[in-house]
Length: 96
Image (cartoon, rainbow, N blue to C red; front, side):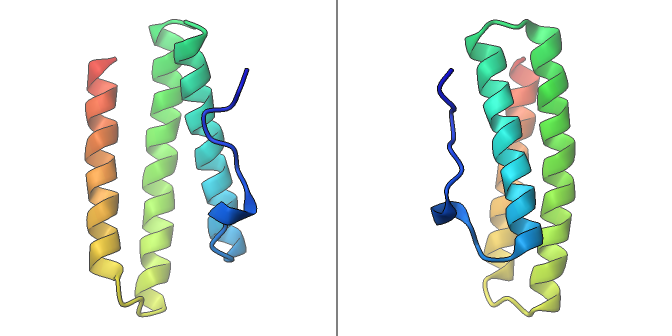
């Protein structure tokens, strides 16, 4: 099956820990996509989406902490984007 998202160096931000987490997120998104496309069922899809939600929250916490430590000038905008993505993920979960 063709992957929904293919990891490439173009997606890398150059911070090893964050890139590794992004690769996990890409893998989980691909698993969700495959579960839906292959009709693995609601239970299997929900389990993967739960894993995606948990890992996303962990990743965002790590990324936001790093941005604060490094005094990233776009922190607030990026945090708002994280909040928006969590809302979208919650909406997607509710539809399953």
